[in-house]
Length: 509
Image 1 (cartoon, rainbow, N blue to C red):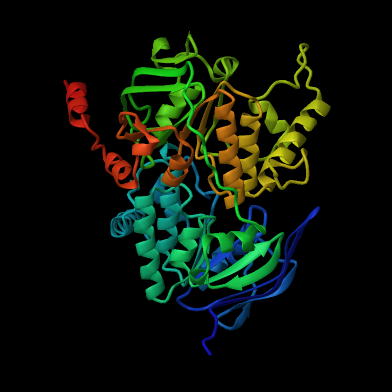
Image 2: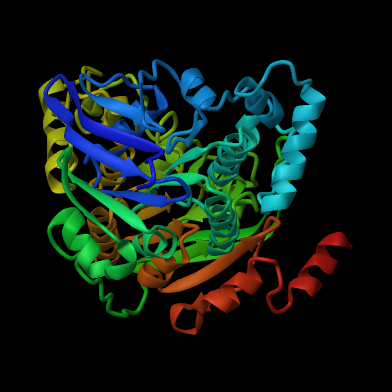
C-alpha cells in the first residue's frame, strides 16, 4: 500500500452560527490530482486553509507522509512542501510582482535572482507576467498568474489550487493544464477546487464531495458526467438556459471613437473604441486579461473621467466626463471584477455595503433608515440564495461565490436601464452560475441593456446576443452569437480580425 502524502481525519471547524467543516476526512496519494467539489459555502476553502495552516481546526488530525503534524501557519506548511494559490489573492498592491513573490521565498535569495526565476518560470509555463510591475496595475487574471508562479517557485510536494482558472482564458487554461499534468507526472500531488466540472474530469483521478460542510461522497470524476457530478454537489442538475432571440430596442450605451492614453506605465492605451449596446440585448466582450478591459470599464463606469463628454453616451446624455454617481442616476449599474475591496468593503456588513451603489434607504434629510436597509439586503440574500448569517454578516465572512452572488444581486435588483458586469460568475458553483446568467437574461428580456465582460467563452456564448473581442486596447467588429466559434474568437484575441491591420495603420498615422 502506498503511504498517502496527506490524510485528514475527522476535521471539524466551527464559527459563530455555522459549522464550516464537520467530521471531514480526505486522503491524497503522491502524484495524484484530487478534486474537492462542493457548492458555494460547502466548506472547501476552509478545509484548504486548514491544510495550509491559515486556519486552526477545532477537532481532527492531519497526517503528512504518514506522520501526525500540527501546521500552525503557512510558513510551516511551505517547509513541509505545501503551497497554495488562494481564490482571493494575498498580494500587496503597492509592491511589485517580484517583491510579492520574494516575501514567500528564502530571504537569502537576492531580489534580482528572484526576478530571474520568475521570468524563467513564466516563460516555461506560458504565464506571461512582468516582474517589475506594481500589483495595483494588474488585472485579476494577471494577479492569478502571479499567485500560480509564486506557488510553483517553492517546488511544492502538495499544490493546493482554489479556483485557479476562474479568470483565465481557455488558451491560458490549456497551458496551465499542461503544467499541472507535468507536475503530477513528476510526483507532485494537487488538491484542486473548481466549479468547472469539465476541468475536474480532465485533470483529476479522485474527487471528494462536500455539501453543507459534510463529506457526501468520493468518486473518480473520469467515470462521471457533468450531470452526475452536479447531482453529487448540489443535489440536482443545473437548469439549462435557452435564451430566445429578440429584436433589440433603442440605443442605451454608445462609445464613440474612445481613445485614452494609459494612466500608468503598465496599462494599455485605448484606441478608437466604438461600441453600442441597445435595450433588450446582451453584448459580450471577450479577451485575454490585461488587453484593455480594465481601462475600458473604468471609462464606462466613471472611475476614469478623462474621456471627452461625447465619447460615452448613456441614453441621450453625454456621459464621458460624469462621475459614477451621476451615471447611476442615468440608470447605469456596474459590477467590478474585484469583489473584495471594490465591489464590497470587507469589514462592513452586507447591509452597509448596499450603500455603495444603492440609496433607496436614505431619506431626504440624509438619515439612513437602517431597518429598510437591512430588509433590502435580506431580500437579495433570499432571492439569490446567498449563504450568510443575515444582513449584519461582514462581507469578508462570506465565501467568494456567495459574496459574488450578493454583489451581482445588489446591482441586478436595482432594475438598471444599463448593466455593465465584469466576470459575473467568477468562483460560483454551477447552480449559482446558472441562476446569475438566468437573472441577466431576465433583465435583458425586461428591456435592460447589458454589457458582459468575461474570460469564460462558454458563458459569453450562452448569454450574449452579440460579441466583441478586445485586444491591445482595440475592439473587434461586432459578431452575432450564431457566427461565433471558439476558434474564431481565439484568433481574434490575438488581434487578427478582418480590418485590424488597417485600423492600426490609421491610428499610427
